[in-house]
Length: 556
Image 1 (cartoon, helix red, strand yellow):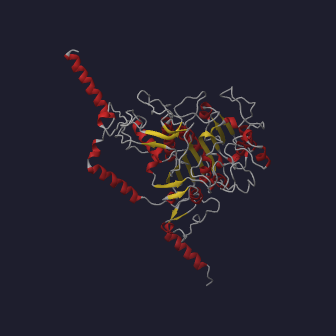
Image 2 (spheres, one colour):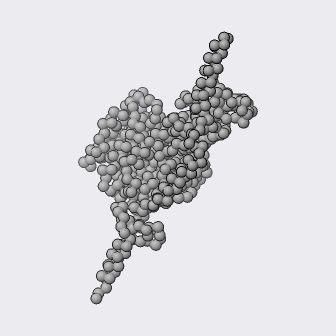
Image 3 (cartoon, one colour):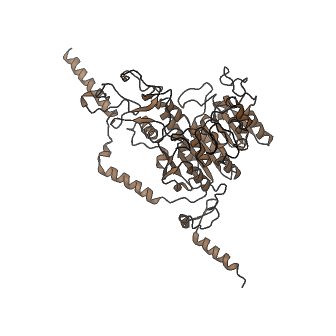
């Protein structure tokens, strides 16, 4: 090698090391100064001191559910978002990180320590904890048992909202008949009964109907907007899917639920449509169309950054259009929005896709914030349960959360921004799963040296071999803003969420605070006396009026 070549090689090596240093183990120079952290804390303190509780009635409620998005998943998604935006990552925020009211939710069910999405959604929407695998039934209904099903079906939030004249909507990236949206309109003791083909004869004899049929039930038929996936449960097993002609529906009873739903609206003199692709979705005018039912895939909707044959709207696009329609209601609205495929990404241990779904969910929350008023709209962001994604090592700032760690306790093992285990000498990822499909059942641990961790389909290592990862028992966060959001303030039972929504919107028998009366049961309200329309009155004026009316009752 000539001297010139050697000098060039040293120069190139220095450049590469410099670039690596800019992406791994970087620091923000301003963070080195103590005043940076003092100013940051003081600004947050000022915001906290300036916050006032909002005692208005919630004219509108938007319930955002990030399925399977527990604290670890949320933290990693926040860092992933920042790194996608060219930051180190940890300093990034999700839009709901800044919500003023935060609590935690305990996700266990009556019979399971670790729950599934159906029973946790039942807790959130129906106000009671129940049994694993059930949809909208209480704890007296064992899974799969239709005995006295009507008596064991509580009144849930969507029905209460409709009884109050509110417009209602469901937006999900899962099948519309799946575990999380199901309890909003259905009462079925088995989450797998999405259509009649999976039901037992005994269940049918005892009066149970499948989840999809509940879309034509007393609550389902009055939903203003329905959007999600799951066309296969809506039409017969002899009818071809419009997007995938080689597939058919699964129903055995010959019904076409989506056509019945549209016809029922038209028979009432309303205009309604069924749409199944992006072009049809784009053609919807939310200012003129009364009702629509969108089912954009045969099963679950496609992952955000994957392709789909006919095209699908994003969660953000569906959220925006749903709100535009629901805001036409002068009596307010209730909207459920679910980022369902966060959970699915974790089940398959494709964390990159799970984080992409979490970022899309974050965007949809931002839409909800931007197009509504905090004075009259309660926004709740929570998860139904957590998933067993785990993190380790002492990765430096800027280390890609979807990559290998850059840290080892033996500095001689660091190389090119990567690090190796001091036990087996192999690289290891920042994240892994407690259980899942990418498990090496041979004695040596899988060597990831030549694996492409930037591949969105990369399955992260798992400690216990399973076909897919499950859930875990970790408490999940509740983030809230708007009327009565301060009622989320500690660690709550998950079913408490329903009761806050009911109270905040004055639904059913929860009208205590809705009549401009100072109630000593709720001393915080003595600072503000609030009408059901959300207009704040002076308590002094109210007291004067009350005194005047009292005097007028005497006969002088």
